[in-house]
Image (tube, rainbow, N blue to C red; front, side, top):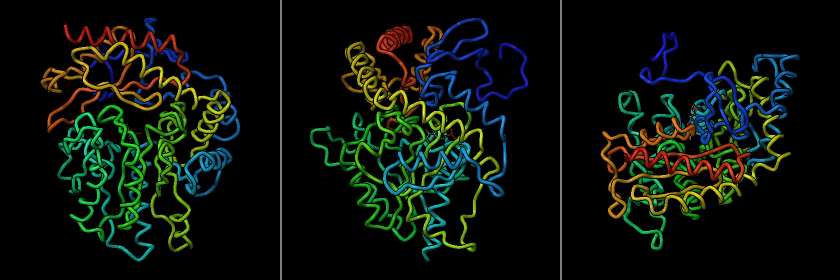
Length: 442
Ligand code: PLP
């Protein structure tokens, strides 16, 4: 670190500027430098920074009650937020289990799936399987279900072993198909994995509707989730949609599963739920799961101190109201098209841009050493990091990430600006990104 600090940073070697304030889609540091926040941190800030209505709602809540434990009280904001989520979520997901973030939401879903099968008299069902190229959080249960080898690596002995399920990665199809001849083999791969372990042991399958943090906005084939739903139903496996990144309007619908009309049994949401104003997450649960918790003996054995926190829930309500009043889900869809159009316009011919993809304001760019062969860069080069650092210097914040390509690290960046971004700002974003990529190539 450049200066003495008592904070243990995730990366102790990075020189972090001190943030002073946020203004719309910008962050400003204490030296006065402005950054366009084109990934909302880690896909969190969906409505932009310092929105007055949300700040006012938080002040009002603080004036009445800052905290009351949910094992003793319910509170108005959490009741209101649960009601709003039931209106917006795919049909039947009428119950919200509130927690403090994405990993907790996934962890709760994993345990709820297990508890459900125990109630149903099937205690042998415990294993949750996920896909390669997925990320569901850093707590041990979520990490075990996920397929990010770099995040799993040193914790591997602490994680249960699960079968590998192919990702929907059309640019590098695991079945070597081109999209024109795709028969959604990656969906059928779930069936293979279930049969490999034995359906009697599998409690749930978890997937991100559009993969975010591990591989840069991988959008599935339109028929993918319908087939996944059929397979899950065939083998009594619950379907958990991890919408921690994609939920709350990010892909141009309130929830990404709505693009395909598929209703999961549980849906995890966080990040955009309170858009960064206060940490919060939730597991949305279908009536048919909740209905099994029928009496005082079979309550769901789980819980966290800050669940249903009034301030966090008040932020969630204010954020949803703001999104509704300003029609921001439609804006996410329209500006998302504009973002993809501009990315293609500027970068389609770039020698080191292999793929551009996404849905709504959730876009990914994959870099390659050679466009013709799709050969990735040498991992030691850390190309995505070079792009991310060059962009940061230019005042643009994007989200670099390492996917896995044939067991090696790949290079992607995620672009997910607040829904209030304008066409002109998208133009500037793409110009700066182009410059950053060119700098990384120097
Ligand atoms: N699930 C997905 C899809 C995510 O992208 C993330 C975080 O990036 C998580 C879960 C974990 O959320 P959190 O970091 O809030 O624990």
